[in-house]
Length: 109
Length: 448
Image (cartoon, rainbow over all chains, first blue to last red; front, side, top):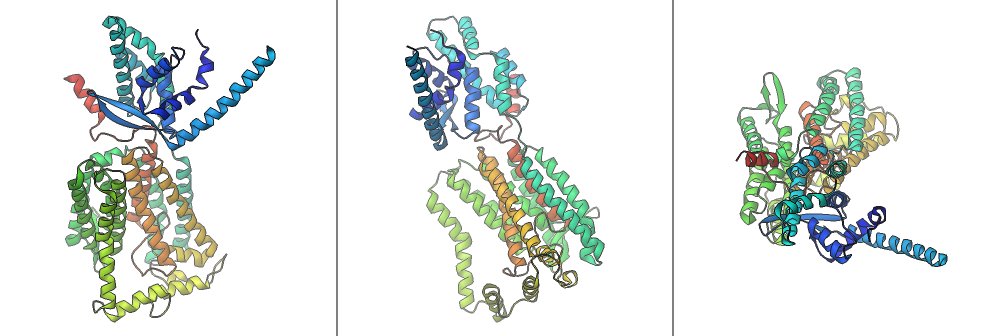
C-alpha cells in the first residue's frame, strides 16, 4: 500500500539517523537498506535523501568521510554524538506522537 | 543521466560546490543502474528507471542550493565595523588635538581604516583554498622579502623592518604575520606524508621564524613561532601525519619552547646574563624594583586613571607611540578605565568569534587557516594588553583594529578577511579538498 508522502517526510530524519546508528553508510546504501527493512514501504527518492543528508551534515548531526570501494570513491556518512542526541529526541517525540495517535484511534473504536 | 545532472547543477548557484555534489549523485545513479541491470533490465531501461528513482531534478537542485550557499558572518562584520568606526573617531580626535609624529600618523589612520575595511571585504570574496594552492610560492615571496629587508630594508632604531616601493613604505615585519595562515596551507599540502612531511613543515616554520628574528623582530618571531607550533599541534591531533600524537606533540613543544625556557633559566641563575638584564626580568615579573622607564610610566598612568573620564595626565606628551603600542593606556587615561576595558573586551569577543567560526568548520584546511589568522590576532592582542598594564617589557606591538599604523592595520584586516572567507565557504567545501581545482579536472577530462 502506498503511504502518504507527508506521513513519511516528518519522520525521515529519525529513520536516517537510526540507520546510521547501526553503521556508517553511503547514500545509495541507505535507500536500499530502508527499502528492505520497511518491506518496500519507504521508497525514498535520492532527490529527497541528499538535501536531507547535507543539511544533517551542516547541522553536525552527521559527519562525512570518503573511502575507496571497488574503484569508486564513496562518501560515507557517520553519526556524531550530537546526531545520537538528536535521534534520541526524535525517537521520544515519535513515541509520544504514536501513542497519542493510537489512543485516539482506540477511542474511536 | 547527463541531462538530469545538468538540470540539478543549474539550480545550484554556487559553482564551487557543484563538482562535489555531482560526483555523489553520479555515483548514486551508477549504483542504481548496476542494480537495475542485475535485476534483469536492459541498459537503457536501467538508466531510465534509475533517473526516475532520483526524483525531480529541479526540486532536488533547489533544495541543495538552499543548503550550499555562501555564508556571510554578519555578526563579525558588524563588530569589526563598530571597532573600526571607534578607531576612526579616536585617531581623528588625536590628530585634531595635538601635533607631532604620532598625531601625523593618527591623521592618516582614518583613511587606512577605511581602506583596510574594503580590503577585508575583498579578501572575503577570495576563495581561501587559493592560499593553500599557492602556499609555497607565497611563502617563498614572503621569505625573500624578509631576506631583502634584512640587508636592504629601511632602518628604524637598528632594526630593518620595512621596505620602500615607489615611495610607499611598508613594514615587512607586519607583512610576515601573514606567513602563519600561508603556513597552514603548506601543512595541508604535507598531509598524509608522514614524519618526512612533518619535518619539512618544521623546516618552513624555522626558516620564517629565524629570518624574522634576524630582522631583528623578536616579538613578531615569537608570535609566529607559537602560532605555527599551535597549527602543527592541531595538524598532528587531526592525524595529518599519521604519527604518534602524544610523543610528537611533546617533542615539538619541548624542543621549540621547553629547551629555550630551560636555557633562559640556566642563563638567569648562572652567569649567562648581565645584572641589568636580570633586574629587568625580576622587575617585570614582580611588578616592582628596577623597572624600565616606560613600564613604570604605564603603571603610574594606569594607577592614576579614573573609572570614567580624563585623569589629567598628558599621555600624548609623556609616552612615545601612545597611538599605537600604548593606545590602550591612552584610552584608559583619556576616557577612563571602563573605556579601555570595553575596548579590550570587544577585541576578545571578536577574537573569540574568529575561533568560533574556525572550529565550526568541517573543512580542515579552512579550520587550519582560520586558526592561524586567529592565533596571530590573539597573541598580538595578548602581548599588547599585557604591555599596556605594565606586565610585559616594552616592545614594538600593536592592538589590532585600534592602533594607528598603515601596515599593521592592513594586515589585521587581511587576517579577518581570511576568516570571513573561511566562513563564506562553510557550507560549500567538504572535510577535505583536493589541491587541484575540481572544475579544471572535469574540463580536462571532457576534452580528453
